[in-house]
Image (cartoon, rainbow, N blue to C red):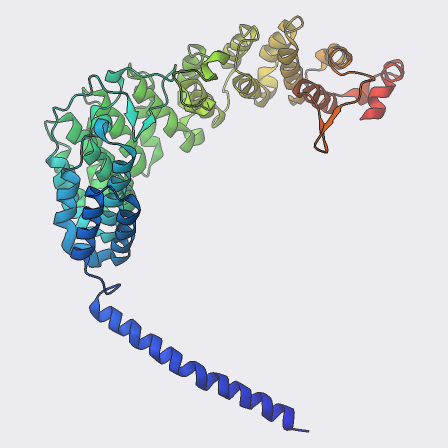
Length: 473
């Protein structure tokens, strides 16, 4: 009766005796590898292979050598001088093709994997930068991609940092600091010195590299705050971004953001707009400025259409108007005057506003609640003769606001039913394609409007007249 138990114990012991030699062998190999280095590979030989494949334009093999160097981590410390020299020899950014950008990115990741020793060496690359490079005659490109953010999705050359366009070196350094983050603390003293450089590019790049280090770079805050008033707009922008990443007391950021929103530099305004959602309600003092900026921004639908000169159609959030809306969404409208401005934008729309922009702006009014009732009522009433999409958007806002605008409810229900009978075929069957029912977007919008409208409040006569609709719901 004990035979099964004995057999199980015997099998367990046999399995254990088989595993022990495997563990011992693995441990010995690990100790041997540790004695030779993190991976037992020579970083100098690996870098020579990386550089050789780069010159031969063998991107796959070069990337493989780069990955092996990254796995060495601090074991790659001996090749820091070679990496620095390699980055110095890279062509200027406006001459940098997609393949060379890959090598530049590989070099940045190798430096970042080394850690603090590389961080100490990197500022000298900044200090050695030539501040006289011009971007005249070059396309406004960043890493091979059109720079986004301007009002018309096109850029004037003098609105962007020359070094971000022309310098592969500075881009590589910035990417390395992004990867290093707090490990780059040893570089802080030298970067603080570079903040006082006579070169605009060096001051701006020093700010850009300090930002990812975060609160551990707080010794640089006084100088960075001063650079937020630098005569050069590119330096002001990088200083503002660095201050936002380093300063832990976000209330200190609000005055700087106010100055940035009032600045003539569009890129500085865009930088401020990108920061505001991150501090939320603390940015409420900026709400008047944001509403004023939105009132003067371009909300035309053609702004978001593709064209022959554009590689792709941008998202609303990539444009100034979208960034302003996003900033306002983080804090909501604060008073009736702001609601009136928003309503004015919607009233002057005349069916030309981008649908996403219209929807998000009207949602701002809805979230304002009773405070926004007068403004919302003005807009909804003004859309009685508007196009169908604009009417649906207005009625949707009127039905979702809390508390509801009671005096508009009956008229809005009548308008909703009229739109339904106009836009939804009563006897035609929808087309079936591939097993899915194809419903035009405008019909879906009307159905959605019906679902949120207070039809249950209709009188008995109205319910009889619209019986088929209620049955369909």
